[in-house]
Length: 106
Image (tube, rainbow, N blue to C red; front, side, top):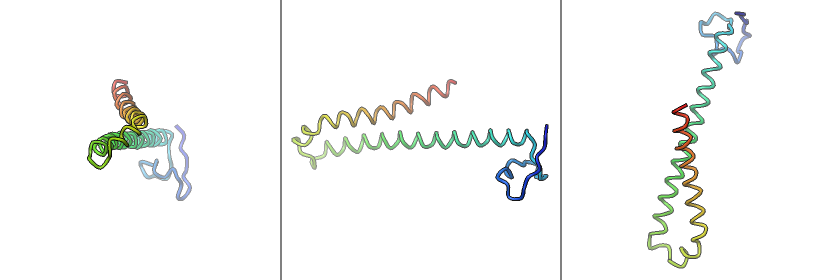
């Protein structure tokens, strides 16, 4: 186990768990693992927000189409685009749920 002396205001200062001014290999490894966990959690939150926005968009779009504000002729004219919209939004939600389930079993 080697120890590294830190410079003042080093970016590795957070890895010095015992605050003795030196960082051991164990402290660096532990700090890197914590950093990896934090990044994975941020990624998970971003994916959850994306899936939530997709669900909200599906519900809002459906409510807008069903409302009397949109005429039947417009719905018929945009029917191909609406199908693509629903498929793409459902794909985002499905991918999030599938990957989440797969990762929980891993």
